[in-house]
Picture 1 (cartoon, rainbow, N blue to C red):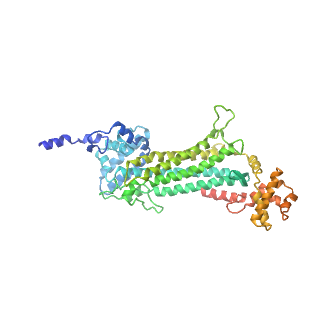
Picture 2 (picture 1 turned 90 degrees about the vertical axis):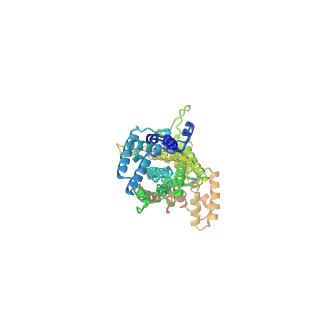
Length: 495
């Protein structure tokens, strides 16, 4: 053996050494990674939640490799057998996640190779961790979006339930937090149903753009192997409404794109803003100064010093968590703004904000659905708890702010006055009612006629809260007939 051959033989790692190397790239390096760098760069203890998506993607990739003749049927069978065992180990808690193996992908690949030998090493043919992680995150997020869609439906149903029970309850409608016009409390609840309906539509739209396959793009430039990427897409359910496979069309974009994560977090942020607006109203309505509603005790807390307190901690915390989710959106946008093509290690930082956004949104929607609509009692088959409405307090509050002033203006317009003149006339009437510390409906007819002679006795119908409510009987209005029509529409949609 020549000196050169001996040197080469001495320096070449054995088959067993290759199996036990911590990093997939270690042959190139002359010193091991420091423990500090391992901890700094590792993602395994947060990205291990991607394990199901990682295994699903790998099995689809292996099936395609076998179908294309790139790996043997025997190797494919071994990979399937090994992945089944890994699945069992992870589900039982027996799987050992190793920091040295950096992430979920290398942990699973190393265990697969340990179980099935060279077949495990052949699995990575034609792919990179760059397209692998992009696929895993998309698969995982697709499933989470489906769960969020279900939770949004549950919350809408809870709101519809409350609305249906309170169609005839009169609430002061506010602008600038000043009493404006009377509205049905059911109508008010349905405003949030519309918001969460749009959120569900946005999530469905995000899902469509998330459900696109990057796998097969390899590191950044594609691969020399004859892959059938569309086959993999079909196997993973990455198809359009017609069942046609949807595949990323540019390998550079495929591995570096995180638009779908940003778009999801934007949709989640808007959904949380809607939760926050509802939270703010629940907090205000629950306060003693309003007393419009009560929230079930299990969603409130007491004070460590003031024994009389019931604090609306759930809506308050949801209001705070909205800032957390919006912060994640800003973080993801900032993460991507300066990155050149293609993949960069920066993208590892997409997962924690994305994961936390998903967790926060799911928990919030789940708790709000129960807090608003109550909990199902198996004995009665009815929901109990949730929001309790104080209809009398709401109606009394609506009487305090001259909520029917616009109705008087409309009455005068129907008598022939231009609206601007009617508006000015009613302003004088309100001023008089304020002076006499009474509602417009309590002013004598002679006093009202002093503001305009066209006013007749029938004015009192339009000045009543109930008359005002019933008068707004146009599509989208607050009249009980319209609210019931909207309830029917939502019930049919959510069935």
